[in-house]
Length: 96
Image (cartoon, rainbow, N blue to C red; front, side, top):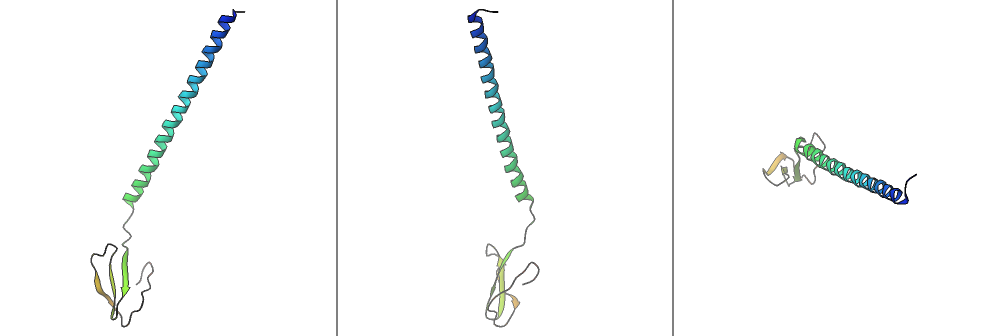
């Protein structure tokens, strides 16, 4: 066989090789996780950017009409639809 010193050096070299392999695999996994996270963020951003405008608005009841405006309060129309004594507003996907 070989001398004890040769065996020891061989075991140390083999251990160093194993450690280097483990470190490389961990670095590779971190890179993959980082890339996957970046892809997930980009996919969500693309979905939000490409999502159609829902056309959402706010509606309220006045004494003589139903008022409406955009969500930010712009384009307010106090008499969106005439209605005597409108105490409330019912809304679904198609109708006010």
